[in-house]
Image (cartoon, rainbow, N blue to C red):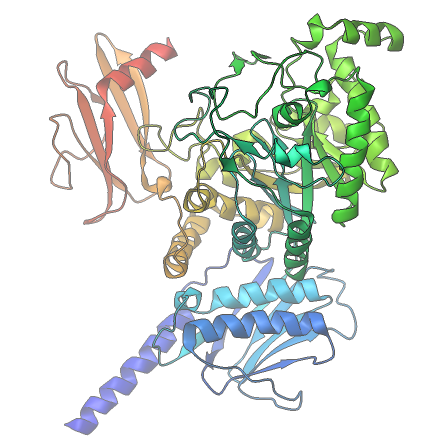
Length: 635
């Protein structure tokens, strides 16, 4: 009987291994080419690493992999000599370059004897290593040792390389300050999905986050504000003597440490100093930089901008003065120190959302316009941008800015980051300027991911499907001017790292695939299957993500005196159940099959999604008053 039990146990272990091998593979971003093989490799406590001992980059990549394996499995992967041919995982640079895969591409071959990751350059090995980790079971993401008998890697041949060289995420560390260690954590998460550019938004109205040694007040004053918690744009204005206790900044040594940390993971860091608008922290530090004399403070999240339908104006002047030579003297110092710190070829000057209503009242601006022959406020800003470009170029760097820098005339050599849709990027490309695409309708990951009834409130929704629809090459644009794309995480409403994770994932999965994978290889339904598998990996890694794709979409209209609610789901295979009687629906409640009319006296609609017998979406409580307001807005 004991031998029979052992036989069944052995059969079960083999069955598990085979099922792991033959189940669908879930790699994000989808590789260029993936061929399944019947063989499989089992990683165990005898598996060794083969890597060039004389190449520090190759050793570092191999070390990242063995460290991850040890953390999750407890296996210590010793290095073996190149002559060892079995039970090995090798990281190898090609002796002759493979022209198919370029600098960041790689190949992976998995056989019963071992795994070979090959690339032309260490960056390619690094991305191949990330794919190899994704081929292992989800438990490889665990931060503590998992008791598993074996770790199966399915047999595959993968050939892969990126569609674009610029694959970025922007992290706003101004509106809420994130520590150096938290920025490192963000880098660790993004490189798993082959991002190679971290855009750090370092200055804004709510803070100045980088030490400029020649201008100490920028951090002594500009890095600190009154502490407030709530909804940005509605917070209580600070009292004159209220303590400025919230904030922080990165010393230049911190920046050097972050740059080294990123470079070790093949990530460039793009610094952004946002001027001439979004400059309240700088003006609070040095009030003489403003066109409007007065006393200024770093914004604590109170309302100081008036936003309309496509228009905006400032209630308090938050701009640098283009007519003031002291502004350019200060920026020469700022960009001089930044250029010395950051090796990346570009410096981002912002240029977005510059309210010009105080400029219109300024005698200094009127004199500047007359002297320089400037027709309007757009040309005033263009004058400013062109002077900033000369400063940045004098430091050996190139200027990039948000697409507003097109207004009034684009600076001669500037690159454009297109955020207000794709038209700015298309226009800049036609002018033969380099472009990075970042359209807010697809890749602004600070926006809500689902319905405002359940998401932390922001003014607009960008669903996962919209992020996956991102196409970095605008219609009619010459692809050679499109450097790539990126997603942007603004943090007005993001107070902590867990919420930053929630807002980033899974939409950053989608953007990663849009900038890495060939467009004809993208498939929404297969992407969702892989996303769900990666949710399991994130559970193991204890990284937070948004389950918003499971929640229903509300479309409300009026039918006579009643409200009509049309419900749908972003992904297939879900059932929706609902109630109007204030109770909590489950799968024994009415199932949504067609648009429903809201009962005349109902005050609340509740909905939940199921997959089969299991709830998968979150319970959404929708006030009927909200439905009515939405229907009225449509009229």
